[in-house]
Length: 341
Image 1: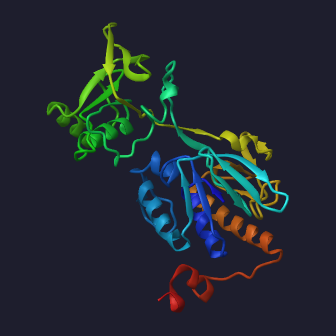
Image 2: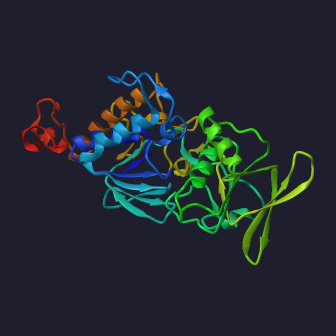
Image 3: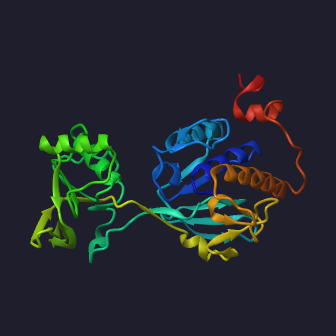
């Protein structure tokens, strides 16, 4: 079980695959890539070995292609909430969606924590989460006949409003409104130009004001009550509220699993990157040790040693070192070489 689908978690899957170990992967985000893809998806990265430059999204895509031969089982959009050692060996992992998974070994690659959507905190609003209140929106969802209100002023909010307003029918909402406290949006110039064009064409409306409360009628969310910059009150109607205020990292339930922590980071043995509990390893930004550097390439090294450590712990003996350039077994796992061609 790999908890965390950022670059280090994905490379952990690869290294475990080379050891012949199949993986399930849990991540709170609805897609792989973690912080690298969500926060730095279009930013250049220059220190990945053998790659002169790539974006966070490109790195994620390369890592996903690399682990494809090992066919990991994905559990995205859910957070690992509890971990229970089992009397017969291994661990029972519970998720926020009620999934229960038994794993022989667990690898925590949660970075600085699960990246969760920043909530809009208005009295009574949380009751609508999952129905009329969303923090992520499936663009394949049919929204015809609905008024979508996108709350936020950053790139994520602008991108969501544009994607909804330009979706084909019947996926496109009848009305798309972008609501922010002021008529200034933080997004790339080309995205702002597209927003301006859609506003001019009447495809996106903009509501300016600070959200102070919700309006309900007959058990449904019907509007947000805004205070405009001039101090007046405005009721902004809606059928569906999409909140896009960015992501915040939270270590969350991992902090309650009884593993030693130092400044909210897991303490590990750098020979195997094992925690104090046999069978639980940790890598990446979730850990601390003397000389630790929070770099993706450092996490790749940690994932390699963790995979060897776990494989030998499970086997009960030292394993021979093999090379992908010459090992027919490894090439067979990867689907290359004589056995893969």
